[in-house]
Length: 297
Image 1 (cartoon, one colour):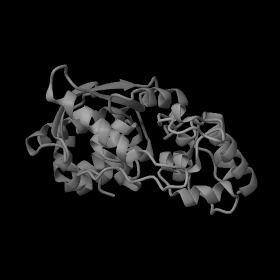
Image 2 (cartoon, rainbow, N blue to C red; image 1 turned 120 degrees about the horizontal axis):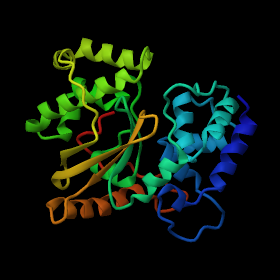
Image 3 (cartoon, rainbow, N blue to C red; image 1 turned 90 degrees about the horizontal axis):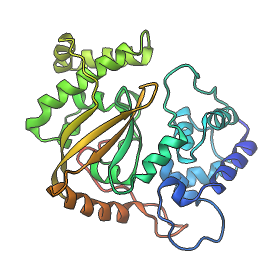
Image 4 (cartoon, rainbow, N blue to C red; image 1 turned 90 degrees about the vertical axis):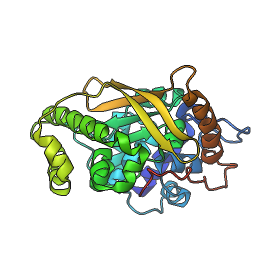
């Protein structure tokens, strides 16, 4: 790990970004260029103190998962991400394998969707990035580790995750997720990550095992969802799924139907989300996202 070079690289990448580049409000006039340190920490899901120590060349070696989060927060391209990994003393992710890197262009598109909830999800159900509206609607979904990173895994193994949908919708959601996962696994032949997820699910959930044995296959391209939110009630919303060329990542955009109750509910969540996700000044620690029944760590 080259602490000095890593610190300089992080600092320079931070200084090149503006709040608008990452979907944050500009706020008060800034005396120095770039994002503030606590804003990068907030985007990467780490403590401000930890990030500050990295920029001061006195932090511990970050994990590959933390480097991936920093790559997204700083909007790094593939070459820049690999350089970050090398400076931190890790091998960069294999170029030929599906990984967690979200392209800067896709992240800019995500940030531009300020009025609608949107998130980037892997084909194995891992939420890789969310905009502020998605966090306000669904809770923070990017901080899980291990098998629990997959929403599909949590759906079949953690009862709290099912609180995100009304009980009468659970059967439909289970069938949709298993059929979509089977299609994704077929595109990942001999992939150990996919095999591990399916094996763990079959061992942990008889419901999943029964559905898997049906061999239903259906790529999820759109869906109608009802989200249970503790502040605004049940939000009935359409979900459009836009896949990348490699089909290993999808952009999910949640849209209300004109004239529906969901229009007003999202307006309210936009205010709630803004209040909870904006730090008041550069020295303050950013507040946690609003509590959510689906946000179990």
